[in-house]
Image (cartoon, rainbow, N blue to C red):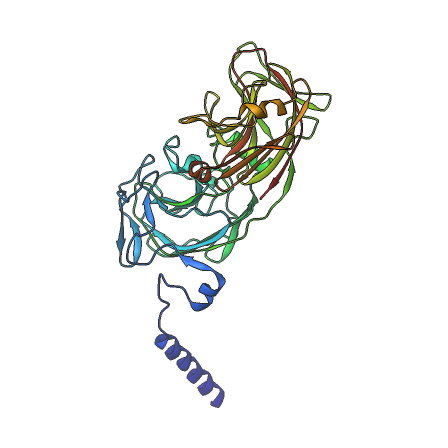
Length: 423
């Protein structure tokens, strides 16, 4: 009797304690979280810090309701997205969410804002949020909750989803290309971005015609109104440090790690990378398949014929081999090798003074160095500094490195020793 009475009293005391313990407050950080570097992305009262995608104010169908960010459900595939004011690179991102019956939404990251990109998902990966049980159409595994949408499917043996109208907790970890998706305390997706396997998935599925999908190393965070109500709270983020690495961009054997745009010729000959005008005599580009934002790059080049070429940085490619970004000029003597040209908008940003034109060695090997950090670009040709430019527009951009063939025909340039260190 004494044992049973003790157990009963203990159970009653535990229940009473649980009933008297205040529920955790929403949209606040503990002192421990603050000390660890966590920050709130939603204060529980306003939408301060959020705005329309590609906009400077908030007009999209989102409101604050009962301490939650709510999607009204009037968005569509083409509209209804809101993004953070702040750009994030490496992070842990945690949030609570619930969705309307039959609903569909998402949390996107590394979203690039540019008028050329009409919707966020052509650049930013998406943690899928959807009503797996009540969605009106059959779902593929890559469409289900916690999937890396259209790329990596969740581990269904670990997937615990609460139904529409109930709160779930999700987490994304992005740590220098290592990615994890968590759902209600379980890790259900894990992969490495920008590996051969990752690029194979990207180029063979839904994103094969979205050349810049998933390449950005940083970007805004985005919430999606996909035509159904969704609620978000306790959105918090902790930034993680960037890691540096050294990269040989050219292996001397083939064009692995590069992508060809246009119809001009790019090939390897006797351990050298060669660009040569083709029969169409148009612009052509050989672009890294990865983005490189802050870096120190050295490359050797030899102009065998009309060497009108260049090295683009923080650039992206549109269909039709149209490049957007900045070029460090490589051209015949008297044509500003080492200068900076913007491919759209402003044209020449820095041209080379006449007294520096003799630094170029026509028909011989030259060494070009490009240092890009934040909004500053420095260039050197054969050890002599050519440019020191700070520009806010460059500072906001990110993208690929790309070698160029100018239009007009008759161009042939050799390249070697393309060595890069990220910063």
